[in-house]
Image (tube, rainbow, N blue to C red; front, side, top):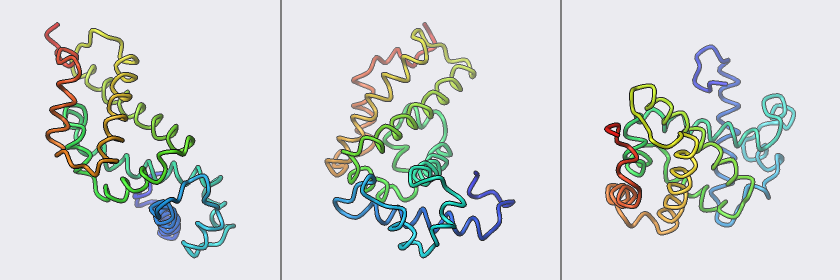
Length: 190
């Protein structure tokens, strides 16, 4: 569902917004992991009845996926080249990034949350690299392998960056990132 689609009933959009904001608030509490949050807690915080919750979402995971998709929709608006070549600076362009950082920090040990985040990151990167390929960028390595490598490196560095309070500026992180990977990786000249 496109949350911002004007065809979607305003009441439905409001319900989605309330439920996601409630989950965001619960996730951003210190020590609060996703796997310990209940649908009842989400509904109480959102002041939405459980029946209404289940009318729109299968379970709390479905709501989590919806929320991550909302963040991802904002992220892909940054621009393809920026996302691929300047990932850390691109992260900083996304609204509510501090809240997202808190959610990631609070759930760094939650396997289900992390698996979904890794899956989502890989899907976005796969789309990005396929689009670059369609635009004429030639890669000497299969895109699937590039995505695995790139997403692993980016996920690890992002986690380190967030855990260390983003003390290294985003521009510098991008420079370090590209110094550690083969610069020919992005060259269409070979």
